[in-house]
Image 1 (cartoon, rainbow, N blue to C red):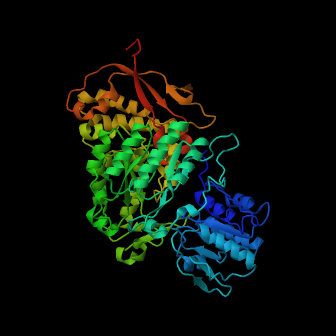
Image 2 (cartoon, rainbow, N blue to C red; image 1 turned 135 degrees about the horizontal axis):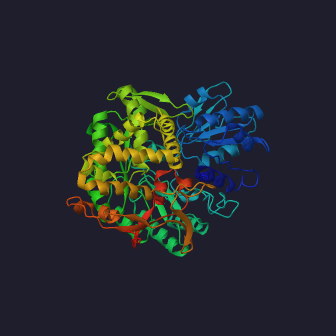
Amino acid sequence: MPLDSMPLAAGYLKAAIDADADLGGQVDVRIRNFRGGVGLPTMARELFGERIPDVVAFSVLGWNYRNFAALAETFKQLNPRGLVVFGGNHVANQGERIFREHSYVDVVANGEGEFVLRDLVEYRMTNPGRLDPKGIEGISYRLEDGTVETTPERARIDDLDIIPSPFLTGTLPMLDGAGNFRYDVALMETNRGCPYKCSFCYWGGAVGQRMRAFSRERIAAELDYFAYHGAQTIVLCDSNFGLLESDEEFTEDLIKTREKYGHPRALETSWAKNKSTRFHRIVQDLKAHGFKSSFTLALQTLADEALMDMQRKNMKVNKWESLVDWLSEENLDCYAELIWGAPGETVESFIEGYDQLATKVSRIAVYPMLLLPNTSYVENRELHGFVTIRGENDDFEYVLANRTSTLAENLDMQQFMFWARIMGENQYLRHVWEPVRHLAGLTQSQIIRSMMKAAEASTDPAVAEFRQMAPVIAESPVIAAGLRRLSATPELNDFLVEWWRTAILPAFPPQWQGFATELYAYESWCRPIYDQPGVPLRAGWRACTEDGEPVFVSEPVDFSYPVAEMLASWADVRLREPVPDPCSYVFRAIPGYSDHLDNHETAAHYVATAERCEPSADQ
């Protein structure tokens, strides 16, 4: 079962109210944090079962918009004079639409919400039964006659340290009932703002284009707090980590914290789009101290016309090849991001870009295009010819067509994305891409299409069920569900072994087919261990402890070729005849993959590694 996600936004809101001298002793603020998949009756019981609140504030995003609107309706039945507040990027500046669709919502916050909610609570206490808070900046609200009022924009918070820390104040609990860190990752901000205004994104518009930072002392204290409570992975909610001088200071403090406590062990973030010498220094420091991280190439597209429409044409991020080469020289992995469905992109240009990118980076995250509120794409939807549909269970606008791609083309590409995201983005296949490209002459997209074709032809019931999981829109929850099914179903692995044997192996030159057979076996051993509670480990693995830490260790596995060493020197090896050299490997993986599988960035930390050992006596 996945761990809880940290309710950072709610933590800020509660901490700001609790810290207010006039409110702290007069109000009881409680956070209710719900996992994905929790039903509305359960949420209603948690929210309203003990007592009925006077104010309910929801941190709204596309995936919870409809559920929270339903809970607002229930709340108003229980407390008709209660106050419902919606906040978050998805609803900011969308008051007219929100109030039209949901008569139970009273106020929409249009920017940073920490002090907006505090002021609304204070207003409610001094004006019970009334709602005309025209003195509170940064909100939209509805009067009793249905009129919608929007107050002047609220100034961005310049001194971020005036926002009480939800960690240092003890606002958010850190441990579960067993005394373990209760969240999948530790979320924190070191700054706010984004200097860019990409057409598909509202980050810079939501929190301002001018970067503002929390103090080094506060951030260091929060890092210490997380490490003391056993957090293994820090995820920064920053837009461009590696851009500011303070990012280097953060890295220094992160390393000192690791030296003090032994963790955190991983850092995930949205890296600076343009990689400077500062970025290179940070990466090298993290590597030198054993930190895991996913280095992101946030390209989104390689098509010039699409880049122009995205307002990203002149960004240095587009000069990505040299960065990948440098990361490779440093023995550091990275992954790339692409978006399918951008205007200016065609199926042909997207696949060309995908395969071009795959020659350097096989791990490519491919996201379906969404039209997000307040973005340039939404403001110019007619110009771009967008055809969209809102999700059945969410409020996102999914792009089905635009001026350069048809509905039929988009639906076909969504099927491709389902397989590409599981196999490439989530690294179910990780080692085979380059050998197949060089020796069998197949691009990454062709390999994926080959797999799709084999699945369509299969009569195996397990394959048919998996094939039917491919969605109309290849959104992340469906990808995670598919990956879980694949990891837990031996018949699907058998199908892929047979696909490799019949569709891919014959494409290798005869002298390389022995290596290619073992290549796929090696790939299988390198996958993370899907450690479901109560389910035995897959054959050949055992759980043990090494250096005081839990680990999964395989039995020695015999190979006729030194696959690991050949892959490590592939640029030279592929130019020579393969020479058998019997060897054995022991594989190691850390536990916890089943809890982190839903996030491909953190899941990447759980792939197994190989260590050569003495071959068995019968080799």
